[in-house]
Length: 177
Image 1 (cartoon, rainbow, N blue to C red):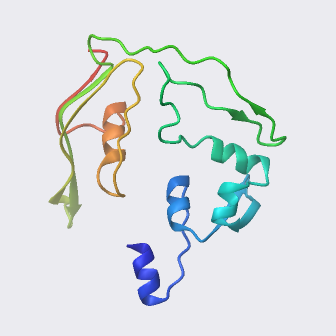
Image 2: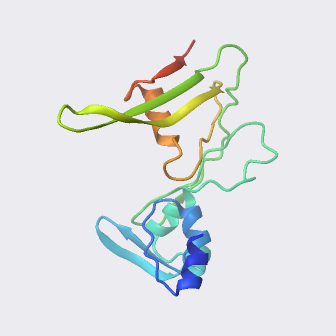
């Protein structure tokens, strides 16, 4: 949608994000910053294909590649690239497969989170935002589960409810049973 609007209206877009997948998809040029300073800039395609700076290489190495673990019994450690020297340390060992049967480590049952919108002199609830509605999921030992969605769809609110940072309106969050 952003690309369509950009072409249709001839507008410029300044996109600030930590999501390198989105950067690769949307940006013509990329500026990489580290500790408040620009460390690398240029065409996005070049930065992804041939990053010049150690920090840029370490940033790109931290992005999981779909299918990169195919054919392995268990997950492997990501390479570690020193941000200042660019030295690569690739762990040789695979991580143990810790997927087990039994009770999930995290389980959500019909989780809902709603926020009151208050207003007026007495700050009474005037409306209610339904941020998360009836979300159910399980996460097993050693498993990685990605919860993705567009901004405002409830992913962060779900995470906050799991951590206990906000109270669920209804449903259950079970940790280790």
